[in-house]
Length: 248
Image: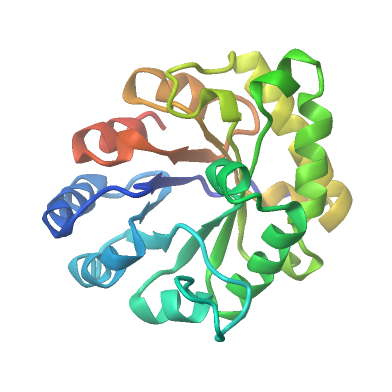
């Protein structure tokens, strides 16, 4: 079985301006020949400028969401093809903020994943439980159901990753224990192997996301079945993001 190549992706969320492209350049300058693939996912307005700034760099540029259709009367939305044309190589889908604030379902996330593949984008598909679900002992059931419902069969033999982000740990400073992270990642791996077969299911990176920072990155990134990280606020500053990447 092929071990997955780690991926560390920074999600800038609704933050950043053209001046912040300097941070992206600093990340590119500091990555060197690291052990992981590295990506930055800025707001859509910054994708063309960041893509241009990082031309020839090892740092990939990603987007934070896409529509499931290639075009149409969807005011305010952006098609996957548009993101690819702007310079994106990856796209985050099903982030907990999209699920919670915009009521995105597993079915919708799966449709967006198909759209991403259609446009040649690599999906990062997010799953995770709330604090209430964790306290009720339902974390594994919730997460594995999200994996089954959010990953379309079209992902077979295509590059993608799954990001486990416990909702209660995002932006709170709280982090699950290493044992809790390993338990969920092992459950996700089992679903991937069951769905896509032993070889392919084992080769998909499973990222951890939720208050990842330089101080805890090494412990998290070396946990069993953790194949990288989806980093929020700490990816906005090159020094912090490079500190996390260095945890590998």
